[in-house]
Length: 243
Image (tube, rainbow, N blue to C red; front, top):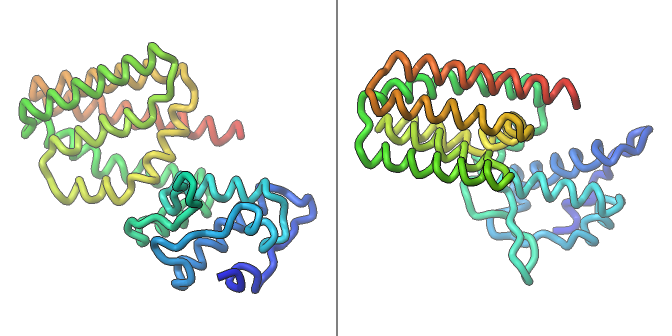
């Protein structure tokens, strides 16, 4: 497998940027997945071996592996090594394509897509929700409250709430769209909720959305979801501009 990594050396930019190098490593591994040289279940060389293959320090290799793990392309198995993850490769490669392009433009595109399916999802949820759906959302919001009180990240539980709203719509196609975009949505929420001061604001939006779903108030649920998405989009834009 090593020959696939070293056929074309990485380009050392003038500033020898570690960021530039780690993105090239991500891109190279993505290419190996597309071409079938890396398949589900394959073990990657060690961090040291990868650094030698790419002729770089271990820093950009380590960062590239973090990106790939976050996107679900690889997984660390304690005592065994790093393996290509056994999930749908089409979804992984789609996520990598997203990550390799301009994040500002892509995140805005993502929010526009979210408006298309999450607004419809909350409308349907207000019409179709069951008591089990309501109970599931309530439990998630209690978990979110606890995490905020403990000063812990909330992006994962925020994802769970939005997924629960979509589940309450009882529309398989919308659920499939949400599942397909799950890695990108997680990345987006990491950005929008990286500022802890926004955690309570997000919780309040979620609580309002749930209340309107319980009341079967379709229009109010739609309005609050739209405000919530707009608020998160502004937060992401500010975060990107400050980087």
